[in-house]
Length: 70
Image (tube, rainbow, N blue to C red; front, side, top):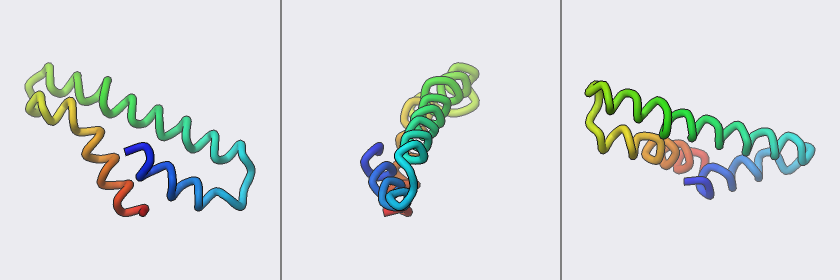
């Protein structure tokens, strides 16, 4: 997931500074953490979504975004 999203973003930001690439990678890691460990876990523990979707939802979303970007 990180490769599928990171490679296209790195190519898009290759003309810019290294700070932009670093900021985008840290931003993506924070979004992934929030979706997977916080948001997904909370929704699964409340019973709003199935537990497998709470655990795998961030990976599925990241895979979808990475496929589109690639």
